[in-house]
Image (cartoon, rainbow, N blue to C red):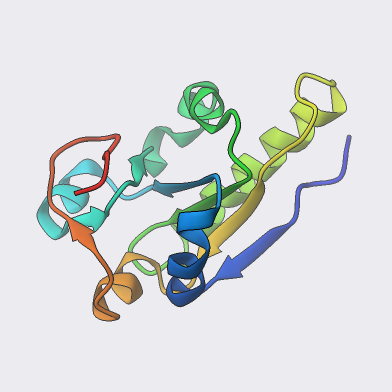
Length: 134
């Protein structure tokens, strides 16, 4: 098996800085109810943790051409890192089978959505699973 694409944590401040100049996807793994009730990072995509493994093929289609992907949950202590690991393993498998030529860098958002919102960064309240940015 190919080595796993590296996993790193990224701060909300670094994400804001990186976002405009990068081909970057943000994946929210919280359930739809929390995402709707509390809001979400503008421009993020929702791939819930409960069916994350089954949705990997759809996520891979969305990630085509992306250089990095940032995953998060509420605080990025459990679900966000677990889904990031599943994604990294899936990417490693695809690389080893030569089904993809390169994999995006996988990040976990430090302190998750809670940290993002507490820092005053943009929060969207649209009900879309694939937010276009509010």
